[in-house]
Length: 183
Image (cartoon, rainbow, N blue to C red; front, side):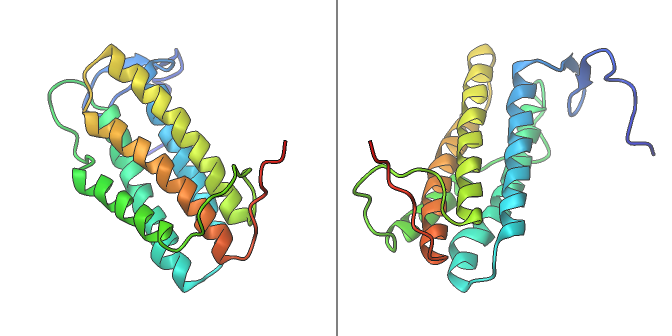
């Protein structure tokens, strides 16, 4: 089986379970951005030094998030009434909220705005957060054009919150201060 099919050479692509759309369609921008986000999370995990607290609160969650992003992409790549093979559940959103609460219980309170940075893992998670926000904007566009599962938008919104807290937590655990915003 070859990796290239030549079926997309004219600017269209096939969707999961049938249908073809333009490669600049809003749903492709949405799930393409989710794919980019997944790759950035993979990069963050590849930079991650072993540490028990980070494994419990960040690394294991990010591995699960990578699976969730694949499910979100499958949902966005499926047209019509037939459900995709994989989908996000309310338990996935709850898992993110519980992870946020656990890290927030350890983090010192924020007293100022912070700039993205710190340890390379924390900085990469900050990049992932901005890509999650961009994915969210694309998902909102798709939702305005056609009916999609509302949980998709809820999950990605909660994920960006999780990534902000995870970046702060990672920097704290790895001993890298986050630069404060100084004006």
